[in-house]
Image (cartoon, rainbow, N blue to C red; front, side, top):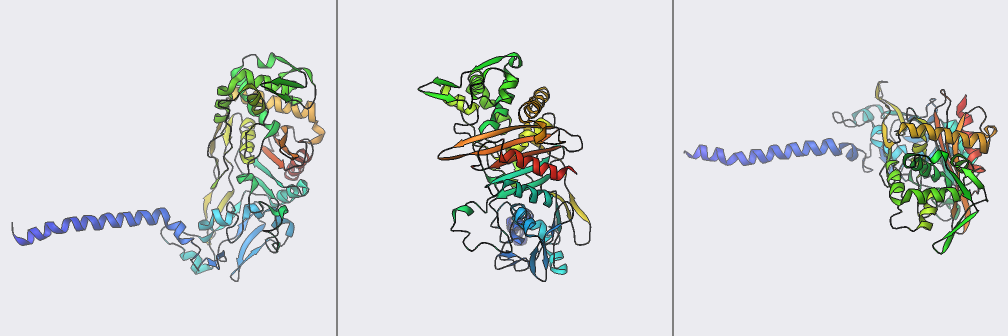
Length: 455
């Protein structure tokens, strides 16, 4: 073998290594190019760490939430709209990590694998994002919270469109408070409580216990329970808000009877209750569009009867993410199939071409269709026979309140439910921190925001 041939063979490993490196480089660029282009050192997009050049953000009705003008980020003219949509639109610096400005920053820049950010450099803006959000409904929701910390979420349980996302406390992006990092009233102000908050669920968790009972106790709907007002066990006691006496399963849910649901939880046992909670998305990472939700936690392993009873009525160590509870309500309303909420309705290029259109996606939450039908009947009964349809005019409403006890303060006020109207397939969740009974602020806020979407 001559020297030329030997030298040729010696080059083969180098050529293979070069080609492998090129393939790896292209792969890394394909995977990470979007993130690299949206890095805050990119002065085509950012100035002093803030997005200044990007596409516009609109609500579902074409109302401008944010846009770029003369190298500055401009927000809606209405202070009410700016405050109500702050946590979903986000801020140019990305401090609100779940806001559109941060989660969809590469989309706003108009980045593509082929052209990079050429469009942004040429036209002075990237893609425009139209959200599923209704800004007016967000304003109605924020007003209805009445200054309480908390959150409201509304979505179409058939399509997944997130129509309302309110988190309080909030602030005006055009005029942030100078003492925002120092005062207690602003605690968690950068947190979108719908996506990232977790709360003790109180009696809204009885929805999960009821689902488990329908799945595992064949004659649960014919059973009755005696409520003595409290049950002593394991050196402690479980207490009920009232002494309800003899109640059926339906009445127990209507009246939110702790004693009845404690007995149901003990009959089910920790294993069955834990399995149903898992089926409904507890201890599982869930997403709303590109946003990872805080994980709802439920663990009754090794509990005694007292702890299991408290868990069955929504206390103990259970913590629930509000958007997750919204998705559970949506799954029941949708005949058992959960739908994931989405934030962005469509993305439009600078040339006016729609480059993305939202599609409905099934979530990890699913319920036996027969159980879902029975749960709809029970939750409808709650409104008709306990709360009153007058609390939800014209909505054909189903729902459950929650009064979640917290140490050393007033309880959190919860409401979760949905409208059965064919032309208004909306589920709603409200949490008002330390606002007292769920039949108060949370229920009235749920009605207020749904009424704003009714027309």
